[in-house]
Each structure stands twice: as C-alpha cells, then as structure tokens.
Length: 420
Image (cartoon, rainbow, N blue to C red):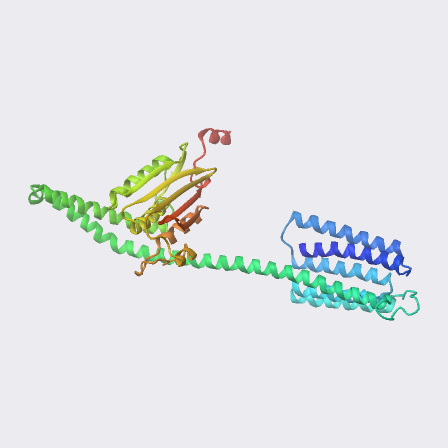
C-alpha cells in the first residue's frame, strides 16, 4: 500500500504536467475543469489511504484491490475526457494489471484484468475523440507518437522503480524468515538437549544419592573417623558429589527446561561477588581477576540460569587461559555489561562467524562448543546480546550485555506509588 501511495503521488504530478503541456504547449483543447476535478478526487483518495496506513499497518488483499480499482477508474475518467481509446496513454492500463499481478492474490489479479478490459471497452464505446491537428501521427514531433513515447517511458520507469522496491521488500522478508527459521532450529535443538538432560538427571540422580549416603556412612565409621586424612578425602568426595548434583541441575536450567530454580532477591554486587567466590572455590585456578565497576547497587532477581550463563563463559576462558582471566562488570545506561577476557590463543574466524551456534568449537572433541551456544540463548531470552572478539594484544574477549529491566526489581517507593 505504501508503494501504491507513492506511485499515486507520482501519477498526480505526471498528469498535471501532461495536461498543461498538451493543452497549452501543443494547443489541443482539453476540458481542464473536469480533469482537475478528477485529479482532486485522486489526491483526496490518496490522502485518505495515507491516513489509513498510519492508523493500521496491516493491509488486506481486498483493500489493495480496491485501491487499484480506484486508480483504474480515475485513469478511465481522464482518458474519457481526453480522447478515449485513441489516447496513447491508454497503455497505462498495463501498469495497473502488472501491479495487481505482483500485489494481489490470483483471483484478485484476474478481477483486475476484467475491470481494465471493461474500462477499455467503455472508452471505445463512449469515448469521444479529440480535435487533433493535421499530421498528429507524423514522426516523433506528432502529438500521438510523442504521447506513445512518453507513455512507454513512464510505464517502463514506474515498473522498474516499483519492482525494484518490491524485490527489496521481498529480500528483507526472506532474510527475516531465514533468521526466524534459524532461531527456531536452535530452540528446537535446545529442547532436544533439555530432553536428554532430563534423562541424564533421572539416570544420575539415584547413583549420586547412593554415593552421598555411602559417604555419609563412611564418615561416621570408627575406622575412618580415627584417620584425619581419610576424613579429609571423604569431605572432598562429598563436595564433588554435591557439585555433580549442581551441574545436573544447571544443565537442566541452561537447556531451557526450567527458568530459575527458586529465583531469589539479591543485589548486583552480592550476586556477582557470590558467583565469583563459588566459581573460584570449585575451579582449579587462582588466576581470575575480578573488577566490579557497576556503581550504585541495585536489587535484582537472581536465578540459576543467569548464573550458569556467566559460569559457562568463565569456564571457556579458563580452558583457553588457565593462568589468567578477568571478569569486569559495569553499568552503561540501563544495561548490565559483563566482560570476560583472557590471555589465550583467541577465537578462530570460523568460531566468530558462527557465534552462538551449537557445537561451534575448535577443541575437536564430541559435544564441545555448547558453552557460548547456551550463553547466547539465555542472554537472548533475557533480551540481551553476546559479542565475542579477539584482542589486539592477544587473547579473547566476550561481552555480555543484559538489559537491567529484565533482572532489576523496582524500588519500593515506585511500587508504593504504583499500588497507590
């Protein structure tokens, strides 16, 4: 509809120029009063169409058909007032049919063909030829041949402009559909992973619980209680069993099976400080540098999915750079920005091009490459983004940008005001 409105404005300007050129330039008398009245009606209809488009963007097939029929009707009126079927601009009917073939459904296109045929026949039957000068068909200077030339150039130009814009719209639509299909495939992959994780959790739950019970019994046995070194090993084994349970729960959350196991209220500083402390306690690395520049502390809702997303990125950086990695937190307008950089070899160009795709990794082991994939999808669920790049001095950097509106709780004053 927007393209038709633009073309209609072009048609109005073109008709005004053509009418005055023929009437005053070529000396062919035209009923200017009636032709200007028809143009005024066309301008009013186009203004109404523009207002309709601003009120509601969705346009039905029937509305486009009606708009094209109005255009054909106004063209028929102008042709009837300026020579009928003998007017060289009668071939502008083909432009309307071509537009209908592109924009309308099949039955509507054939309806356009029928309407234009009826209008053409009406021009033949009821049209009155103009009093043209002698030799009006002679050469390019003759009014009729000149009109044919202008009509052909106008048809060709408008068709090229219109179809170029339509093709651009179609390419944009296809690009968006491809992106939606890709996202649907990724989400389907996450669902499959969630089903596998559910099965794994079900299978691993019993043996892990059994191990926890056995270790608890060992801890109370006199033979183990009398040896501190064995007690220390049992404590370590119990901690590892508990970590296995946490990993299984984290996988379930990361794959989308659940969104936040018992989300709790906390603050940005507390959430990040506890996350870093827990990560340091469970990973064999002392090289994590933690810089928190967030500024004013804010109340947020913390859940395991958000926590697991950040830990996945930290784990990837740890594998690439066991000796040194850094987590930086900052506040940019209404965005929480987390930057994880390391001193490893960096990302390959293939990994950067396929960032966020499953099994996108240079490790070469089956099942690897899911860390950033899960991080990208969790961030996207929260309305955020994940960006990866290589640093000029070496190493890699992953930037997590999350809108604070997705995690920050409103102030109590704002809540009271809202309730009031």
